[in-house]
Amino acid sequence: MLDKLKSAEKRLEEINENLTDPEIINDQSLYRTLMKEYKQLTPIVEKYREYKNAKEEFEEANQILSESGLDKEFKEMAQQQLSSSRIDMEKFEEELKILLLPKDPDDDRNVIIEIRGGAGGDEAALFANSLFRMYSLYAQGKNWKTEIISANPTELGGYKEISFSVEGDGAYAKMKYESGVHRVQRVPETEAQGRIHTSTITVAVLPEMEEVDVEINPADLEIQTFRSSGAGGQHINKTESAIRIIHHPTGTIVECQEERSQIKNKEKAMKMLYTKLYESKLNEQTDKIAAERRIQVGSGDRSERIRTYNFPQSRVTDHRIGLTLYKLDAFMNGDCDEVFEALAIADQTAKLANSQRQ
Image 1 (cartoon, rainbow, N blue to C red):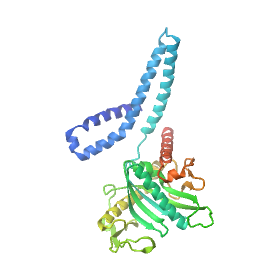
Image 2 (image 1 turned 90 degrees about the vertical axis):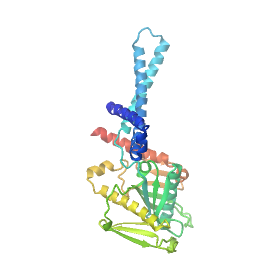
Image 3 (image 1 turned 120 degrees about the vertical axis):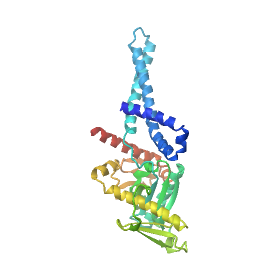
């Protein structure tokens, strides 16, 4: 491990020098590549330097204690430093093991999120809107950009389904654990007797892909245009600006109707198609690769119930890691980091345990 850390520190110093070279600054592609590597190496090297400082303090205290003729007070101070630096070294070692785990290559990508109403009819559709709002507020707090790709609204203000993109640094790393079934327990707005109903919605989080990631033969595509429509089938656009793309070899269908421009709708739909085909490609790979990519804190299966939102008790429970918080209002207003980070830590811990067993 120490050899890896020394190499990482040396590489970071090399990149630091290269980033000041005018020729590299003018080569935007190379500059971006180096900046990406710099960002990945920085937390590892910073933690390694903390570890080295603790090790130096440990060795210094050890050296002092080996000397004879120390007064009692000075000896106690050295003993405290020895004990404290040993604890720090052990802590930094564990943190470094996690930082050195293989990184998900998709972590830095933007995401496409699909939310679909499940059991519960209108209440499920309303909760789909609530989750869309929650993710949007979370993204806003990170200074990320969200854009609706396709939506099927209901007359009561919910969504039968909605797809949207989230653009921001590390969006997939933060949000990839959201795939699965989300269950809500609350009194619906349409419930006159005040009874609590249970509804479900399904969320899928996909890393956004580009043309360079997936090859598509234009001859395999059927592109249809249609009029954008709102809740209840009322037309909100009298021109056929909405786009539907069918990929015949896989039967994959994507739609976009949120932009007034047919060109922009087609761009968004194609981006979604690349993402969907990439997901299918991953699913077809061997069990070994699928197991390596599978979320450790849960199967990642969209049919698995991952979280419950209980409004009467103001409770949110993530079933994969057994975490319950009584701050549902804050969570629904985008304060999600406590849960998202706990999921990431559980995933990293499980991967570390697996790597140590192998």
